[in-house]
Length: 247
Image (cartoon, rainbow, N blue to C red; front, side):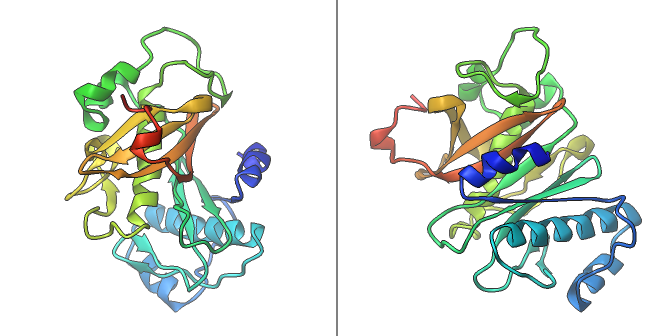
């Protein structure tokens, strides 16, 4: 994961990493302590690791941050600071950028590949043509331009986009991220991942749009990490009139 720092830095993003195995994890303040106290042991460690990762991501872009409370399941950052947090398989990752109200922010880490059968939970029929049917090894690193996508990659792209769109004034439309079947995280009602539409863009990127409002769209890069993937939002997508990405 640390090898992603230069790639993210080139996009103006800071990267923060933490693990649940770090010794002596402590809440950064009373709000974090109160939230952690109500959680099962495993979830508590993930929660605290995510907060550490967020503070490290913010420091990477020159910003300090104390405790990060939450509203529901969403982190609440002090004014002028924001980050996106994800965790998978005991690793927490966060991305942050210098203050910019016009730039969306979102990331998603998936270190456990999803089965092909999970496609029905993520995609609609008009997106299934994006899937890669070739029986090829999964290689870490940037994905080949023009190659088909795995279910895991498309899920990660949508999850990262959901977080970014939820942070650009769509809060009343988008539900909170939760746990789905077999631990599959998804956006809860009123808008779920199948209510976002993903399509290919230039340079191996993808564009994810809100189906009910296609002008709400972000560009996402998905990078392969071991047998998993990491997706992160680069910024808003060009208008529909200047892009044929979704056809």
